[in-house]
Image 1: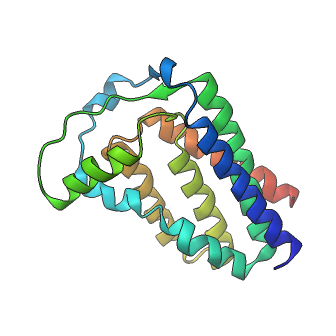
Image 2: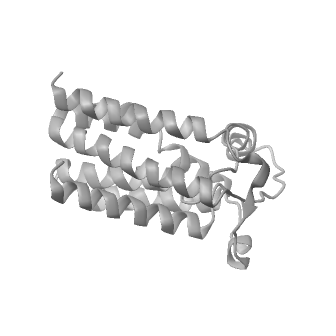
Image 3: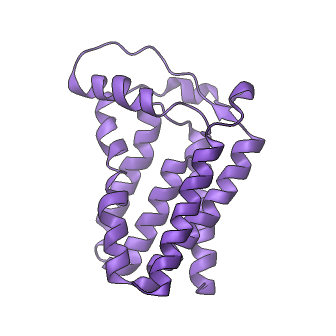
Length: 195
């Protein structure tokens, strides 16, 4: 592995490490910033599938970017790190949470959502959505590497991932919008500066 590979890995490790530390701070002063419109969004358990499809970013996309383009992997890692630092500051300033409805049912999607996702992923540090931010950065990076003809399919996937955060009640509209803005802003700044 080259120095660029190692830098990319270091940036990603720092991003994950700082998030994990912060994820245990500020639980005593959580606030609900949801709007009335957010409360009208139904829980649609089948959206747990696109929500969890975020996980291939860790096990498929990252190794592929690392193998395909060392420089872009470094930029990807740096972008994730810088974006995560901004998210961390916002998590401290706006310790947002949301109120989840009671979810009954025994179908596979409801059980997966209620008994796995909701239990493992508490509704804390929701603004902006880390899920959305990382997905947008990954899709923009993949689009640059895979070629823009394949970009349409990637965009459809991204829309489903972003929508899923709302339909599984992990995030509210503000979280999604802010996550997209942070991702696009820093991905473009770092890409154009060719860090």
